[in-house]
Length: 368
Image 1: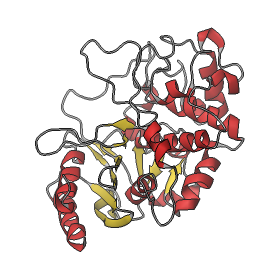
Image 2 (image 1 turned 90 degrees about the vertical axis):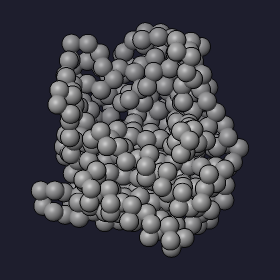
Image 3 (image 1 turned 120 degrees about the vertical axis):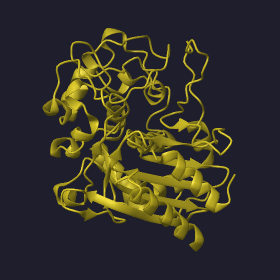
């Protein structure tokens, strides 16, 4: 396994040297053991601060998989079920025909609420209670379970608020108590950072192709409102970094992501197994809406995780679960090979290194 560490370090070094990436981290657990913990490049081009193993990266929707784990923990303990209507634990949420939305719909992106409330800004985004009040007043775009469409930002409160209400602890406290503390990640995994770790956060950059800059139109509902775009700039903002949104505001290390997924595999990691195998089997069942896309493609949504991971050399999707994020970060668990991976980066461009990195990792580990 020392060979794997050496080869993946060389691979990351080459990505940075060739200008394909600015700063990256990669961590991998195999059979519960950390076999790769590598990093390369620059965390802040303005100061020259280098990436190290403790650099914190904004990981966008990679956060969703970790929020899903917290949901499954509370389901396992009987505090809530996948079929619990959100309005049953969230008074007022059932207004305007939302009474049929269950936790499974929120986790599986079929709740019919993919769009953020109109007219909001950083002030509302940073206030958990305000966002929940606004979402409770919204009308669904379609009936619960009718179709699936990615709930890019609303997922955070649609999943997080029911958990908070049945448990009694704020989301961040639940995360610390149930995932971070058992896994030794109190300094490495955040959904909303404390002031004292700001100096460890990587600065994000994006290279747009000419004419490809995002066009902001706030005249109609959007899953990602105009004030949040471009996303890399938003997550360099101190308010956004301190906001708790379990859909997209996670800031963490690749090591933390990989360790979280290692604790979901059979046998866990260092004696910690977050969920029993039967709960994982339930959590990774594909969630099919009543109406499938016209192209016939099945949605790859499970209960909070996404299915079908990186491609093998033949172009086939490998059977994994996890969640990736805007710009190229990702967290993956491979049940068959007991492999858990975390990957973080801070340069967003058309050269997404995620697939090449994951292919090379599997190759050096001798996995199919």
